[in-house]
Length: 640
Image 1 (tube, rainbow, N blue to C red):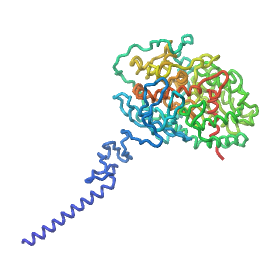
Image 2 (image 1 turned 30 degrees about the vertical axis):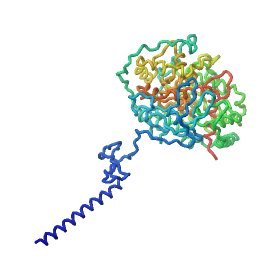
Image 3 (image 1 turned 180 degrees about the vertical axis):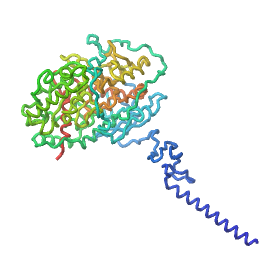
Image 4 (image 1 turned 90 degrees about the horizontal axis):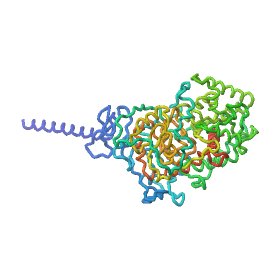
């Protein structure tokens, strides 16, 4: 009996040993295989690849995702430390003009210098700036995160980074869209007929009469009554639009257009086509430069490209201006008001002895000299709420051009261009002039603005045609005491939300409806000037802010800023999504004083590109518009 018990005991012991061995083997095997929920089973042993990251098929711990989704094992809410590379500078103070006691912050140390020919996409991080209030959520503020790099002294009093990608990009939580987004993804297939509310908006600018304009040393007028210290209780309702392209998305669209967007092959070749191809080769292979005697590198996407392209334009470009068309719509520039950009460009273009040619066979570009504003004044039937008359007028004009001249037919209009600043110009020219290069103030992606072909035209409010930009400049950065300023009519929903949320709520935020006195003073003495869209995405405040030395805060979804293909807007402007209006102050105070001083310095440097002169000067707004048209034409010619 004892022997039977012994045999049974040994047999059961062997079974237990086998069972334990199988369990241990199963655990070891599971260590190296993912479960269906993309998480991993808790390890019995300290294996480095194991993560406990799943709580079931519909959710996860520590950022787990739903079943069938791809997980990301990196916690993006934590800042990633970047090691200083070769050439990085530590413990160096930026010598800022008018700010002798401010030392460079870690944010400034992280700016990068780049010599890349194509602009790099700015990476974003949800890490809050040290100067941000403690109650700001990481999901609210997103600032550019770039690698450390050296500073370079620009003049005796100012040292700034030379990065083309160092930027303040504030777009709120979840603002980015898929990298594969194209302009057609966010464009609207239908545009409603014009309404009287969207008719010429001459009252759109909150500027006081000329007699009340004073220099920046006057006392500040009262805009808002003394506010209560507590934040507003009522939160405006802001609808979220999934079809919003951030400034980073626009950068990607621009790069893709350069690589894949070309004009159709002409019906017959010309000497001008070969000159455009040669110009492209020279631009693409130009020797890299980092300094220029009059141009400031950080405000450009690529200084080398711009300088070379501009130089060739001055030497080679020839424009043929059609004589067809009669006044008042054609050859009749209107030089005052908020649509004056198209008039001043027409005036200088038709009068240019340097660029205009009477021989169309040598022309690289063909200019269509009509006014989109005068189309509305003289062709549009008031209260008709229809574009039909304007569209028929332009269709007849293009038919005349086609039948009288062979040049349109050679490229189907691809080497023709126009400048239209009225809000309706984008739609007016969308059909019969769709292949032309269109310089448009209403540079709205949703309304058909095409990267690489169309040009974002600056909207300038010219008060005096005799002296178009007689009032410019303002206080230095250290003397600007108001954090943010906006005043204007309640055109569109965005401004109503802005004023409803901030008017009389905070002494730092001088936000209000139209004012009759003090508009210029606040522009000249505020750190940030809010450029909120009206009925359309464009606003003259963007240029006004730059002229008065105020950092623009652009609150206009899907708005392509002027000269977008050349200027690095992220270096001197702040972009805020419309839905982030309630967080506007938190966004602005998160920008360090040193960073603000750098941006304001860059605003002063870019100012020369937005000034009209009675006689055009190098790099002024006329030449920048013409160069943008030229540049797009050069890079849309299909390489051989």
